[in-house]
Amino acid sequence: MNELQTELKSQLEKFCLAKIEPFMEHDDETEEFRMSIFTELGQLGFCGITLPEEYGGAGLTYGDCAVALEEIAKYSVAYSVTTSVSIMVQSIINDFGTAKQKAAFLPSLTSGSEIGAFCLSESSAGSDAGSLKTTAKKVEGGYNLNGTKLWITSAGIAKTYIVMARTGGEGSKGISAFIVRDGAKGLSFGKKEKKMGWRASPTREVIFENCFIPDENLLIGEGEGFKVAMAALDKGRITIGAIGVGLAQRALDESVKYSLTRQQFNHPIFEFQGLQFMMADMACEIEASRLLVQEAARLYDAGTPNSKIASFAKLKSTDTAMKVTTDAVQILGGVGYTREYPLERFMRDAKVLQIVEGTNQVQRVVIARQLKKEYTTH
Ligand code: CAA
Image (cartoon, rainbow, N blue to C red):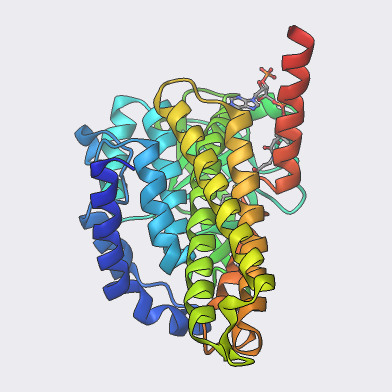
């Protein structure tokens, strides 16, 4: 970690301990999202951390962003994921938007006064995102959107939505990307999903019924939407990886601290080799995951993004988060399984990291396709 990253980490640690940690058990129970926390993260510069300063961002790297999201995830996966998805939305507008679109939509997102959401998945188009059915029919001056998006992180609390909808024929080439603002006529939200984890982060359906979107809100051009989504997910997968690292690190921290004080058979349980080996493996897997996330971010920052390495990072870190949080519950034993300690929440929060932004099976598909390319072109 460089000096700036050490400073970011320490600033976030103080913020999260004071402003997030005290509420997390309560908010997990009541499924409450506090906009004030997100806005304060924005005031500190974290909600638009990778965006250019010209649009209110902090102009930092994906490496810096990964350090920040890892730190927030130690306290709350919900706020880390809200920030990560909102950054992905901003990166889409910044990478593919016109100067007018950037000026109109970015500042409120970079400042953290508003949240962004990404609408790709549908009930019959999860892993097979290219089969989505939401339509965008050309009408005078714009498009009429019809269809329903499912499992949308921050739906209902977000103000800016990137929506993938079909303007052409079947398959990925018929998909376009639109910027949709909350309040658009014909836009509504379904019920809040009752989830196992990420309970402070709302997930809802996003419903379009003859929802008119002006021409000026189309991104790049018709038929480019699938590539926009895939390129964004390459970056999103780095940030989800960083969240997995933070969550796993916190679970290890809690396990070591607990096992050093918990006495059984007249010894702290840390002294038993069976547990030492578990914690040594946890530490090793977390560091390996962190290095992969940092490498994926470094490649992106160097202008040589690599989907395979981004998928490595997401796959390894989120599988590690699941394994480490499960083992952490085991180390704490009975109390680990209760809400007296946060470990059971960490375990619940880890599960969906293996599913979002491409299931870990999809990550293997991306990796295998790249391997095939590499081995057949050399
Ligand atoms: N960058 C740019 N373009 C890309 C790309 C990338 N990473 N990956 C693929 N493309 C392009 C291809 O080059 C191809 O273009 P051409 O036709 O011009 O050659 C086009 O996109 C289609 O590519 P594929 O044939 O590879 O597409 P596919 O239908 O076989 O799908 C897939 C591949 C990897 C399985 C993809 O569908 C996928 O990633 N699925 C998972 C979807 C996903 O991650 N959903 C997450 C939902 S969002 C979420 O979870 C966020 C949240 O709220 C937390």
